[in-house]
Image (cartoon, rainbow, N blue to C red; front, side, top):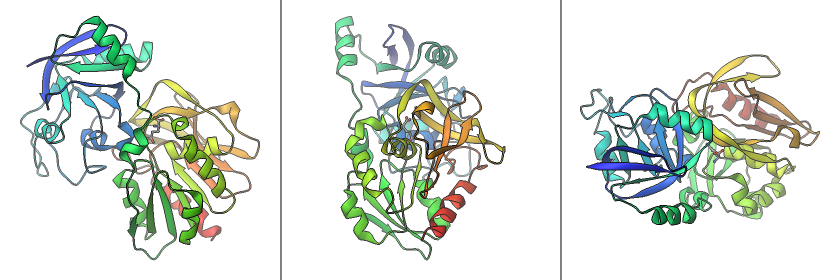
Length: 354
Ligand SMILES: NC(=O)CC[C@H](N)C(=O)O
């Protein structure tokens, strides 16, 4: 069936619908990873977004249930150049099309994803609608006006506390939409974990005899969850605090720094990042639309890593307190595993301060 991708700037891309037939709206973003589409589909940080993959053939190794980053597809829609309907891989359990249908998520194929990506790069991230209907201009305008993604963290965070046994440090995770591979990275290192719903109060968190508090990745603008920032402030100085991606941005805000939106974000598996202490350069996996503002940080916070493409901040460390956060994704789901040592650095910091 014919479908359209309608962008906020008035551009219409014609394609073919796949997955589940339902109209969808979201912020259109591109990901440059050459593989890893199922990790992208299930990463809760994409909640509220329609993702286009720049790699031209998607679905060729199918879907397996081992590589997913959460229990369901979290993107609002999926855009591909060419969809493969005859996947070939020994781990394949079903096809991309069936997976989108099961999860009630709509896709569109046959789109010139190169032209779309260039447009987003030049004009910035914008909203989009995927539909099989003919919408009038006023219907489109009303839909764009009504779409907001401010409740995203609430939608993807755990509703109840989840615990994992371990002999290592006891880490309390504030779950803003944590990826399975981050939980796995801590469990592989023997940590005991207690995962808390995003809006848990600091007072409750501190009752649990934790060795550290970890702030997870997650969707949306960190400034949409001001109440969480207030709770993090209450934990500063009481426990070591660490964070990845949204967690990193929240730490900066809790330390009275600021964040801003990037023009089109960093999403892909090949972002070069420099460790400013060792001068080592790592190829990192990234997925974010917001960054910590360089000139906003207080004097007692050091920038530990920068992005070599645009010089933006990729890591922070407090000069006196055990607080350390990273903007990129060391769990690399999907992406290169060059940065797995960040989890060891997190644990060393916790052990030094236990
Ligand atoms: N992966 C993440 O945690 C993303 C953080 C935040 N939602 C951003 O887009 O910048």
